[in-house]
Amino acid sequence: MADDATDAADAAADCYHGHRRRWWKEAVVYHIWPRSFMDADGDGIGDIRGIIQRLDHVAALGVDALWISPHYDSPNVDNGYDVRDYRAVMAEFGAIADFDALVAAAKARGLRLVVDLVANHSSAEHAWFVESRRSKDDPYRDYYIWHPGRDGGPPNDWRSFFGGSAWSWDDATAEYYLHLFAPEQPDLNWENPAVRREIYEIMRFWLDKGVDGFRMDVIPFISKDPSFADYPPEHRAQPHYHHAAGPRLHAFLQEMHREVLGPYGAVSIGEALGVTPEQARLLVDERRGELDMLIHFDALLVDRGEGWRWRPWTLPDLKAVFTRLEAALDHHCWRTVCLSNHDMPRLVSHFGDDAPAWRVRSAQVLATMLLTVKGTPLVYQGDEIGMTNYPFGDIAEFEDVEALGAWRVSVEAGDVPPEEFLAHMRRTSRDNARTPVQWDDGPNGGFTTAPPWFVVNPNAAEVNARTDRAAPASVFRHYAAVIALRKQALALIYGDFTDLDPAHPRLFVYSRRAGDDGYLIVLNLSRDEVDYELPETARPGAFVLGNLTPPAAEGTHLTLAPWEARIYRLAGEPG
Ligand code: TEU
Image (cartoon, rainbow, N blue to C red; front, top):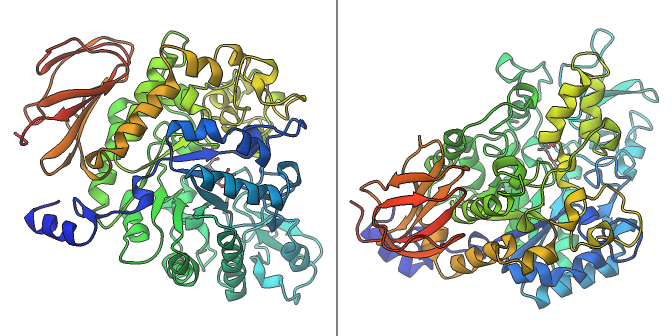
């Protein structure tokens, strides 16, 4: 992409390799799910003071920013993603003074702070919805989406992501309201300018408190298909593609940018469920003034088929995601790299190997990948110490509204045998990522002194931050080392991504090249030792960093140990 002309332009405009340099492109973001991060006040629930207590752990990783999942007042049907009051702090998490203290504590450590914006829907307990459902001519009626039924049932065939119809009947006014998630999460009506103004005011409120920007929950869903017709056949199996394709999405986001994001210089990270890499371009092309970057789902859902049922995946499937993003997004666009979060299984259990013999090494390989494929990496709490999925045995152990909803519509409806459901959930459930962070080998993994709100993984005695950070082979220290390398390696941030061997079933071999500068990354994502002749196009220069010490003077013929990660400089010109 960069040629001589762009090199000259780069120098003039604080660019690197054709990209405008921005702090958030060069940052690593650490994602905190407050309920399970750290409990400071001894009630068994994580809180803001707990986040402050553990900020030194986060800062020691070398990350640049925090994203915290919703900290707002909520009845917690969906653990904070159902907001009752957008200007108040959830009582279990603390008070507004604690939030102010968090802003100050983060700034004192040079950390930026990004908060969650849940603007597609509110809680049904939000004052707007309480009013809205009162009567058809209530001033707040049009804050939400109400429709009469069709043939004695809901207005159309739209489905809730948490099971069942996306419409609930409300007796008071004898109409249905729309909720793409739980019935307790009614969708806001973005066609109503008053709703948009309210959201912008809420954004200004938090920006005035000193936050640096927003992660925007299911933001592509804010513009609804105005026909309210049934799903078109091509979207029936994957409705998120339908909900993300509303006609006014770009207009709404451009307005939000004009009104708030632009004037404040705030960063925006859109959760892009239902957005293909090709559609993503329109949302993040910096010349359009919409969003800065998206959380793409192509990697996260590589092992999910219709109805998001688990299906086997191969390494070439996963690698292809990064190539497709590279092709779709040019140097006017940016993206995140997200391989785990509070909605997904644990990173090492999902894409690595969580058997005790391979857990640390495979977590290190995944860290290397997360931090060196192109985009702003999002590191989810606990992954930096190699936390694993929870060994769920029974439906009674699950807490998540999504898991319980799926059980209702599949097992209780007699469609799926319980054992099959549980096997699926052990692999995929969001609850895997929501068990408390394991800080040490003490009671409750050091998360709380009270009975914890949710189960602690029984492996806390072996897998915890204190043990990991002190061990010779440490997941945490490997993250920190790769993050430190990024800070002095602009080619690792802005360089072109090229998969050098897309079909290899065990290795991920890629380059990050910016003109003459560049890196070669070789990852073995398997338990096998692999002999490998590097392609002509990538000659290894100096070895920079790895999770093992490679044999000296191997040349271009490498022998990779199981779950080995290596980063080299690229030598010379491309062949
Ligand atoms: O997630 C939307 C979303 O992508 C999830 O529904 C996800 O697809 C699913 O959980 C995969 O199993 C956002 C939030 O991240 C999630 O926690 C909320 O439950 C949801 O929106 C509704 O606000």
